[in-house]
Length: 349
Ligand SMILES: C[S@@+](CC[C@H](N)C(=O)[O-])C[C@H]1O[C@@H](n2cnc3c(N)ncnc32)[C@H](O)[C@@H]1O
Image (spheres, rainbow, N blue to C red):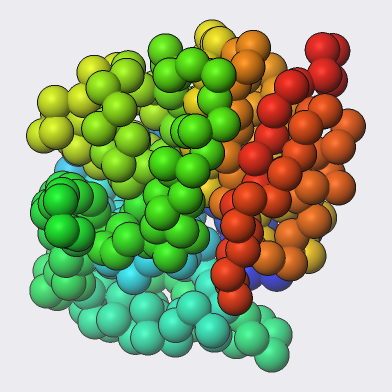
């Protein structure tokens, strides 16, 4: 999947000076760019950071924590804006801090993501030292130069701080911007939890271990904690891992929260796998993610266990899962979601 806004950064990657910094989130996609020793990359998605490292990039995985980078030490920051406004503001504020006087921030993005507003606010932060250009119908790029007297920071909603973000009748959940649906309970996940008792009844014995695959801030883990069974929660997003660890600590949940892409490196077996996967209908990149989540579930599911996937009704999960599981059952459906139970993984799938 190509991203024209991402491509706008590329000329500035090619001629980046020494001490450049690239802030990269999921927009990095499957980029095959050759590594550049003068650019350090920071990303919040473990799989993308690992893929960049494997190609030779110097890449760090964090929730865009730039605190170890000294003030005024960076010559150029490259950033294709993220989806979340608080994160974009956080990164722009950090950029102005770490840039040397005369250093440049290159910003690109899409009109629908609010790039024009970001460019205006960044220009004010850089005390007017910037040029912006409309590169195509929807894409804009800005080049800003750090002045001696930067303006007021953008409102980043205290991006880094975990906070009580939402609650239901039993629990309050800690979360933060940068986590999927960070301040609400996802309707698909709530639908899965409504069916929890009915699919637990299908297990031949109570589960000994539970896996929350793609855990976000850990809603499913917190809900499943009433079963009193150790829970392993995993996600590839640094903000999600931080929030989920906080919820494990607050709720006293036994288990661990592991950063991994699609459960890679995690050891099974789990008799219960809960998953609200990150797929949306119709994107080829997401097809690959579907495969990887299904493969992880098949690999990690224990004998007699169940993997419960809640997905958008349009997703043909049952068809995709057929090569990996012998038993596939759509347990429940509503206007938006369906809950699919997968059992009896085929060995070697
Ligand atoms: C639809 S959200 C569900 C989050 C959470 N389980 C909930 O119920 O609120 C999907 C989650 O999958 C995570 N995710 C996306 N790609 C991933 C990958 N390659 N490996 C692991 N997790 C991933 C996202 O960060 C997100 O937290």
